[in-house]
Length: 390
Ligand code: FAD
Ligand code: SF4
Ligand code: SF4
Image 1 (tube, rainbow, N blue to C red):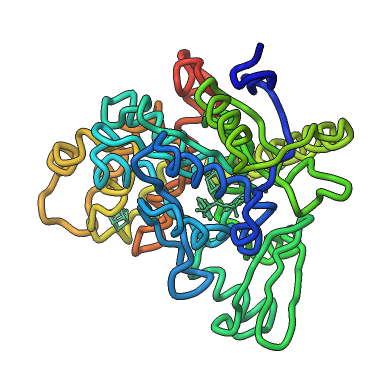
Image 2 (cartoon, rainbow, N blue to C red):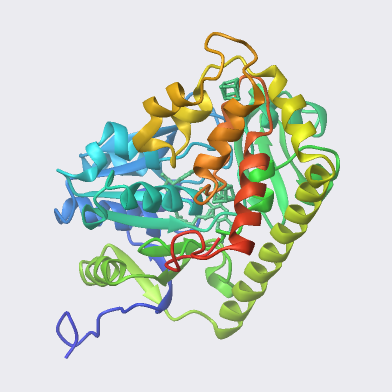
């Protein structure tokens, strides 16, 4: 007998095609609306007190984190924002009290969940109170660079764009008067496209979350209308089972060819990530200390990189003090940065926030990621102490 009457409950490792049964959610959703429907079900059934999701703000370049307690508001968060480069881990720790007093369901990309796990290891987040619905992630495009790319490579006024998507390796925009797609490879050859940390990223299917959801592997008549869901934890299995039983989502077995295809695409993305690592790190290896000294020579010591790093969380204030060699000097001595890199060298999750939010455009993520990857190759335990991979 299964968890719910005759129906066997879902379990870890299960895979399904899933979609919402709510027509309103389906209208706004990216690929069938299973993610929004799961979040809505979790809130309606009081499995959680609130949902943390992302919604479109002023325009497609503006991804806004939003805490929802009214299930009817969830439809406004459906859809994928590929210029949403924000990281939710520190947001949960700082603004939601680390989910210590509230149960929260949230959507996470691979880097969000890795940041969350690192903060949880430092007792800054209570994982027992979190339901993490992972979305596969091929990469995000920095909002400022996306505007430049659309202006220069697409020759379209970025203010006219009302929808963007990534499909079959193309970045596609819809704007007043038409739509256009250009291959991401072509854009990246020209210096546009995904953030550099995203190119090197290997958290494409976020199996560290409770469920991993994406469009890879959905083929046949369900293509574009359903999401491929992989169950990654008991908690995820429980939420999925209850949402199916409660009628919030419908599911069917994935096409075996779809499973194979999903594996192939994931493998290709991991290879591509490795290629970018080799390329980016080779450039740095030629003169690491000279490059770091030159690039950080632009630093204005605003501390944004410290404040936004998910790994610096607990000792942030101490860090600001202890990194000082010559207080008040701008730019700071390069040792200011080397001490920070050393401090995060075992746990940098390559989320790219330091680089993304640096007002001086210093390639900080490249430096800390290169140091961590070298360290991971040389020493054990690896990042996450065997519980997850890089
Ligand atoms: P919906 O019901 O539409 O819900 C989407 C959820 O995503 C919402 O909860 C929303 O809050 C959240 N969200 C939107 N933007 C962001 C963001 N920037 N960061 C965090 N959460 C966000 N799938 C693949 O198989 N391959 C990919 O390469 C791939 N790349 C993606 C890149 C990004 C940036 C995102 C957000 C998603 C990506 N996905 C990818 C997942 C896919 O686009 C769908 O989100 C997934 O199939 C679920 O579809 P749905 O209709 O059930 O989601
Ligand atoms: Fe997605 Fe990885 Fe970039 Fe995070 S670092 S946005 S998971 S590609
Ligand atoms: Fe310096 Fe940039 Fe860090 Fe600000 S974010 S302290 S400018 S490196």
